[in-house]
Every structure is written in structure tokens, then in C-alpha cells.
Image 1: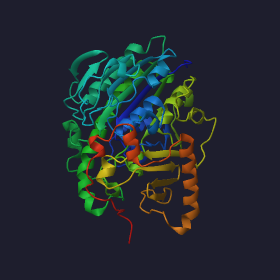
Image 2: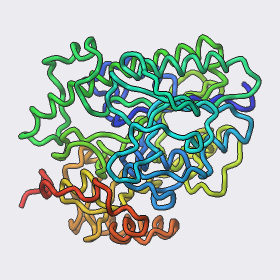
Image 3: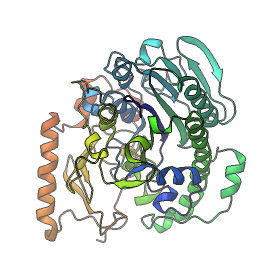
Image 4: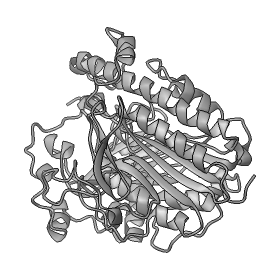
Length: 464
């Protein structure tokens, strides 16, 4: 096993943890992913603490929380001079590569103006090989830019396949080199539009019965069924994409020397709790798959690890596993001793849930900014009105019994509030009204922070 492992980091967009065959979802056709799980450390409680595209990506790149890197709503430009994960690995002799959706150049006009624009080389955050695009969800008509070349090029067909082939070619070209490599592959699906997977995958789910989660309200079950047919078709397609990359690692003979991670930027509600997409503190939105395979570390047999790893933790953890120093700018936690088996997780370990300002789906549903904790067992969330949600996820895995105000759980609520406040104090997060942050950072003109409330969300399981 080489002293500095290669790293292949693959992440999909909007893939919730529950939607995996290895987690028991009968709707999934994911034989490649399920096989990978049987060979990997399955981090069973991985979380996207700010469950929306751009904040996740900014935290992934910097190891910082949203109020520090200032990307806490979508389409905000990340500081191009940040101490990025590519720079951290590149300074230690790694070749670095990024392929796929970027969504970090931002659109300062607040109207998505840069989503099709060239991402200047200085905004590619130090990656040696950068073949990507700011943001598109037209997976069958998708363009990319390469390094400093301003010429748009077309991905062939369904872009996730083309991007996976490009990643495989990169692995093939770099497998025999003396220097290790760090490569990130960012795939767009299963993010909506939900019915744009290649036809053969859509055919699998056409008119197919879908096993819905119990927390989908009765009046939305038909809608959820139709949406999820498309969602699972995308997932089946991405599963085949994974095989392309996994085969390239195997064929290059570098499996023992390569840390492979598969995860997602956040989940997707798909009508659970009566909600559409993401930004919410429920498990469908915040929990993500997280598989880490490194046979040189844990052998070829899979195992489970209960860690609430979050986006800011990924950079320090991968650096830690590679025996590299973590930059002082990083706020996330290095969980590498837990992966190595040197430390065992405690039940009260928790990921910080943070939505700093109301935008998009929060505004659409009349919700407020929030802070919370997702521990191995409990979810606790406070908004600007006070305590909002409390779930015992062990006895209530579908989060249908909010315990806030229940006197039997008053001590638990108090304990969770104390833990949450401690985390906020450590980060210097004053939990101010979101408009204060938007004004501070000049973001009040953004379209998504000015959308009108369509309705006010009501807990579908609360009896008056």
C-alpha cells in the first residue's frame, strides 16, 4: 500500500440515503452500488447539514461552515482565493482533477446569470485538470469547458455517462504515475427534472408500483409515486455510471492504493412530510449515502460506522486518512481516527444543521431559518420562534411524532438545546435573523430570497 493513497470522490446531486438498495429500498435497482457497499465502510449517519447544492459544495471545497465561507444560499460566488481541498492536496504533490457540475462560480446578478458561463481558470480553485460547467440539469444536452479554454464542448448523450468515461480515462492515465492523484466526479442526477433518464431506464419504471415511505401524506401519494418513478430511473442510470469508474480502478490495479468515496450533496423529500425537494431538516433532505472503500485500510469486507459526518468534515477527514496536515482555515472535524478504528463514536455525536436565511423552498412553505443537531439517535431543530422539531429517530424513524413541548421529553429537549448552543458558540454563530446576513453580504436582490410564500407548512401528523 502506497503511503499517499489516490482518492476518487464521486458525488451525485439530490440522492437521499434511504434510496439505496443496500439500505433496503425495494424500489432501487443498484447492483453496482450495493456491491460497493459490501466492500466499503458504510457511514450510516452521514449528513448534509446545509442541504442545498451551493452551500454543500462550498463546504466540501473549504472545510468551512456556510456563515464562514458565505455561501449559505444558492448561486453565491465562492472566494476564488480560498484554501481549497485541491490546493491542500496539490501542495502535497497530488495531481488534482474535477469533472462535472461545479456550481461555485455563482451568479452575482441573483438571476442565475452565470449558470451557462465559462468558469475562469482562477475560479477553478487550483484543480490541475478541470472539465466542468457551472450548472445545468439538461442531462441530455449538456456542455462543458476544459481548463482555460473558453470554447464550449458537448458531453455525448446523457452527461453522467460521458463524465464517468472521462473520469475513467483520467484514472487510466494517472494510475502508473509516481505522484498520487485526487479526483472529484460531480454527477447531476437524480436531481430533477425527474423524467429525463435514458429511455431504457425510464422503461423499467414505467407504470411500476412504488413502495412509498409512510411519511408521505395520503393526498400526495399518487404525486410521489409518479415523481419517484423518474427519480429511481435516474438512480439506476447512475448505478451503471459507477461501474465505469469502478472498473477503471480495478483494471488499473490500484484498488488497494485508492480511497474511493461515493456520496451526495444532499437528499430530496419527494413528498415526505408533504414537501417537495430539499433545504429541510428532515432525514429525507439531510441524510446522504456515504461509502468509503479503501481495501488497504479495512480489507475487502464491508462494515458499518455510525458517524454524523458532514460536508465541512470531508476535507479534513480525507487529509487525515492520507496522513497530511489540515489547514488552519478548516472548521470541520477530522474523523479519520474513527475510520482507522482508533476511536469509537459516541451516541451524542452530532452534525450541525444550519439554514442561515430563508430562500427557495423554505420561503415557498412559509418556514423560517433554523439551526439544529442530528445525532445518531435524535433530531433537534430551533428556528427564530424557538424550539421547532424534536424526534427520537430510533422509535420514530419516519419522524412523524414531533416531541417539542411534550413534558415527558422536557429533559431531552433541554439537553439537546444545550448541545446545540454549545456548537453555535464554538462557531461564533449568533443565529441572527437571516435578512441581517443577506444585507451584510449584499444578497437581498437574489431571486430565491424574494420568492413568495405559496403556503404555510403544517405538520401532517399533528392532531389538534
